[in-house]
Image (cartoon, rainbow, N blue to C red; front, side):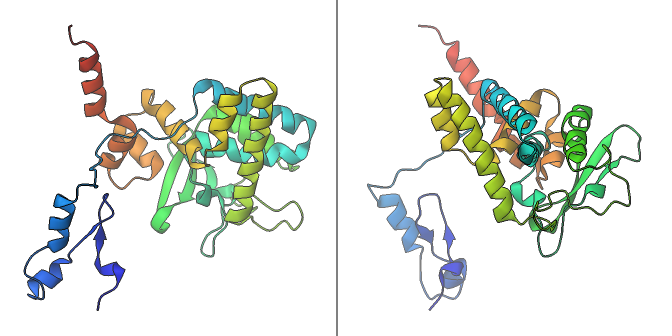
Amino acid sequence: MWSTEDYVFLEGKIPRTPKWLIDAELVMRNYLADAKKNCKYLIKVKIYQPPHTFDDEVWETFIQCLTVAADENPKFEIHRFVVLSLKVLFLRISELSSRDYYTPLFNHFRPDPSNEGWVLHVVGKGKKERVVTVPDSYIENVLGRYRESMDLAPLPRIDEDTPILPSMKTGKPLKQDSVNNIVEEAFDLVISTLMKSGKKQQALDIAGASSHWLRHTGATQALDELNETMLAEELGHASVKTTVEIYVAPAHRDRIRKGSQRKL
C-alpha cells in the first residue's frame, strides 16, 4: 500500500497515478488521468485570480481608525504597529512572531551599509533570511512612534536585543497566536468604524479578510514603484515568476485591455 503522500493532487482534486507505479509495471497506465478526462462533473479552472487586497479608501480607514484608537488608549499602539508593518513591509504574520528558532528583535532594523536608508532583516518561509527595505515615512510615523510608546528611543541601536513584539504582561516575545489576536482586534476596530459610518459592505469585506490581505495590499500598491525583480526580493519569492503570476499577470491585463477595445 502507499500513502496519500505518494500522490500529487491536482486542481481538480483527483490524484494522478504515481510515476513509480508505472515504472515498476504495477499498473500499465494512468487510470486516474482517464477518469479525470472523462468525468462529466469535473470543471477545469484556469482563470486568473487576483490577490485579495483592500482598496485605498479602506486602507485609509485602517490608518485613521488605528491612529485614533492609539491616541485615545496606548494599548492600541501595538495594534497600529503590527497592521502597518504587515502592509508597508510586505510581511507575513509569522515573520513578526517569535518561533523556536528565531525571535524578531529591534536590532533587526538597521541602516543599510549603503547609507541609502533603513532595512529590516527577516527570517521567512523555509527559514530563509531576506532584507526588506524600510520607507522613511515608516521610520518616522510607525517605528519611532511605537518605540516611544514603550519608553524607548525612536531609533533602535545595533546592539539592542529587545523583542519587537513583547507581551505587555510578561515582556516575553509574542507567539503567532497572540499576534493573530492583535490583528483580529485591529480588524474589529475598523469594522466597527465602518459600520457606524454606514459602510456595511466594506465592513463585511473586512470581516471575511485575513492578515495576508495586508501583505497583498502593500505589494499591489508597490507595483508602480518597484520593478518585478525588486518586488520579488521584498516579498521573499524564490522566483520572479511567482511574483508576476500573483501580482502582475501581464498577459491577463493585456488581454482585458485589448478585449475592451474590440469593435461592435
